[in-house]
View 1 (cartoon, helix red, strand yellow):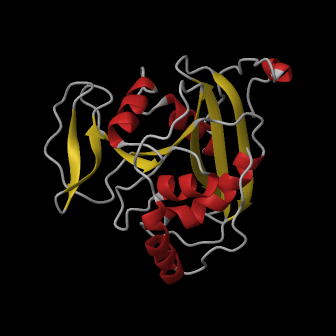
View 2 (cartoon, rainbow, N blue to C red):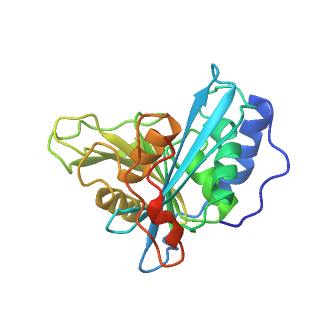
Length: 243
């Protein structure tokens, strides 16, 4: 996957907030997707050595079959502190290192974190989408900002996530009687389309297959499913897992 990697990153929370304020106006919330979508990716990051090393995982799945066709794991020193709302500066440098080594280029990326459901409307999905110029969706496991009504208990139910009267996302129940997910547009996609795609990527478990498998790889929690061989990647069919 090709894109321009930033040559410098903020090193303090004040610098990070200033950059978020600068970039927020560049986020586009209309659908600019390849049709039909053929490859979807999930990205997530974990940490080693008490947070000193970042493990970034990217998995690529065929869509809509959700078969695994590519994956990458990269490790880099962690260079930004843990600060709520500034997740992207801690994780994206290593995520970008992983994306640059992908053999397949996804049409869409699902991020474990927020899109515009963020105090400055620039969560990790927005920031990553701007850098790589790819449609992105934020799929967060917990609420960073906003209020919402109770979500009905049944699978598929959702309610709007609001902040000062603005709809910034959807609170969606992926499985009956499980905690909901917080879906928000990242870049080059609308909320209705983002919610529809996340639903199609979540056939069985609480998390979409994209970020569920990325989380497994980033956190070193077991093997990935077999990789399906692509016409351009015939050598992948013998790879089963990094572990």
